[in-house]
Image 1 (cartoon, rainbow, N blue to C red):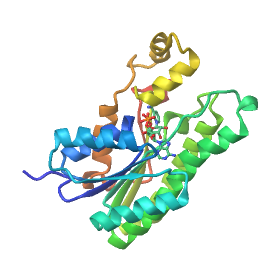
Image 2 (cartoon, rainbow, N blue to C red):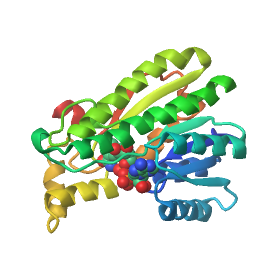
Image 3 (cartoon, rainbow, N blue to C red):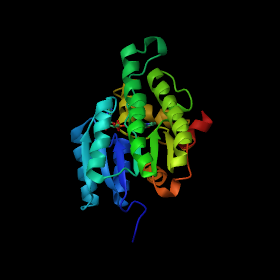
Image 4 (cartoon, rainbow, N blue to C red):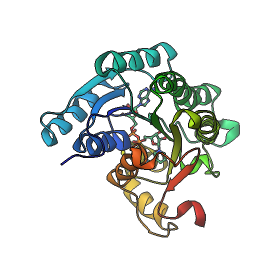
Length: 261
Ligand code: NAD
């Protein structure tokens, strides 16, 4: 039986953990060839292992790269094209949260670092992948924004600025590249239980972070954290040809959080 990813090449950043890893696994199960990028080579190997357990004949390229470094981004795009000849879909997802602090105490270096990964990294990725997709005359990009990219969260100057920026890049490029058959969209996840969110709760109270988590999701209409697999199902749809006419928009996946508070 054919599947929506048969013969497709999908590039994913931040593929060593959380949302990137779950999406890589889901899309591999649907038949794609994968180019997986992360700063952490051990976690990339872990993702590859999970994929091969589920799909023994999967074709997986691993590229260790820091997405905030333009040359490293050029390299991961080039390696993907050299290996698989094309890029059908791009999950531009790697990101960091940064330290939580009110604006006056939010360090300048911290601000630069979070912008460097979350905003510059997403821009570099789009710049070089769009070049490939434009030549192909097709492609889809999903950028990972956040609820923090469509409303304020507090104590997260760098994160909020970077994710609002990702929303801007998405809306802008979607308008530019729709005419070439390329769609560009963003997802805005709410609190999804991944190592990043665990780290965030531990910043608030290292000894009692699970209790902090329960209080954190209490105002959410669904009163729970999202699961990485739930985001993976959305990403797998949005990156497929089935979602080609969804363009230049931001899609929340947050249990209703962004509408309620
Ligand atoms: P995670 O920490 O589990 O995974 C992020 C991955 O990105 C890690 O494997 C990490 O090594 C990699 N990474 C970090 N900096 C990198 C860099 N400079 N270059 C290459 N790789 C790098 O986090 P996650 O929760 O899966 O987050 C994925 C994306 O989703 C991020 O952009 C994050 O901001 C966003 N997001 C997450 C949530 C959530 O609740 N988990 C909510 C909204 C948005």
